[in-house]
Amino acid sequence: MHHPSFTTPLALPLLITLIACGPDITFDEQARDDLESYSNTTTPDSSNGDASRLDALGHGAWDAVVGRYVIGDCFDYDALAASSEGQALLQLYVEQLGRVDLTSDMTRDERFALWVNAYNAMTVTGVLSERALDPAFRVDRDDFSFFKQARYNVGGMVLALDQMEHGVLRMDPDHPTVQQLDDGLKAQVSDEAARIATLDPRLHFAVNCASASCPPLRAAAYRGADLETQLSEQTTRFLDDPGRGAGPEGISMLFTWFEGDFLAEAPIPDFIGAYRTDGLNGVDTSRALPYDWSLNAYDPANPACSP
Image (cartoon, rainbow, N blue to C red; front, side):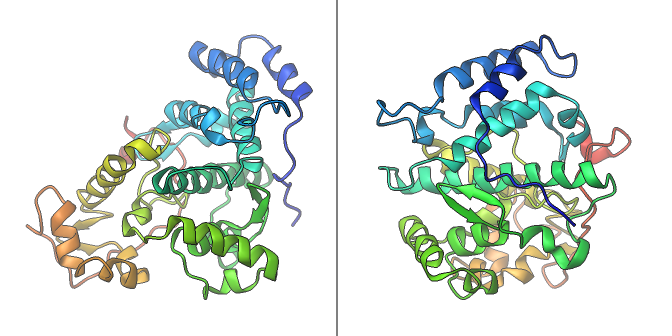
C-alpha cells in the first residue's frame, strides 16, 4: 500500500491558497484567524535566527486543531478531513516540526513537550492519510505497521512513531525499531534522548495511539512551562476511568506492557494510588483490562465522545 509522505514541508503558496478560499462552514471563525496569524508568523526567514525554533510558534497551530476536533475522549477525523482550514493548520504545524532546530536552547520540559506534541500530531496526520484510503482503518492492522513506518519529520529526522516513543521519550536504544535506524540517525535519536535525560512514565498517558483504550488526546498542546501540571492531570484523568485506566475489573494493559517504566518510579499500586482521585479504593491491580484497538473516531452515539 502506498502511503503519502508527510516529510515535505507545505509550500507557502499552498497556504496562501487555503487561506484565500473563503469561509469554511466546518471550521469556526477563530480557527480561520489562527490560520492567518500562524502562517504569517512562522514563514521561514533566513534573517531571523529564531525562524526554525518551534517556540516562535508556541504550538499554537496544534492547540487550535485539538481544541476544535477533540470531543470528549474522541477525535473528529471526519470533520477535520472536511475542513480546509483545519487541514492547513495541521499541515502548518507538521511543517514547523520538520524544520524545528533541535540544537536550540530548550529546557528539558520544553523538549519533552515538543516530542509528545509531535507524536500526537503525526498520529493524527497518519490516521487522516489512512482513512482517506480506507475509512475502516484501525491502527492494529498488519501487525501495527502504522507505528513502524518512518515517514514523519521532526527537526530533519524522519522517524516512525515507535522510534519517537521508544527511542526518544522512553530512551530505549535497544528497542527493535531503534536498532533498525542507520548509525547517523541512531546517534541523533540518542542525542535527543540524552537531552530529555529522565524517563517519566506519565508519558504513556500523554501520547495518544488513536485507539479506544488509549489515554485520551488532550484538547491542548503540551508546553514546557505547564508540563508537570498537564502530565499529572492526564494521568489522573485516565486512572479515574474504571473501564480503561483503573477500577474493579482491573488496570490498563499499559502497566503490563511498560511495567519497567513504572517500576523505575514506584510499585504500580503505589503509582496508581498516588494519581487516582480515590487512590486504590475499589481497584483490582491483579488483573489487566482488555485493550480495544478500534479507532478513537468521534461517534455521537458513543458516551466516551460526550464533550
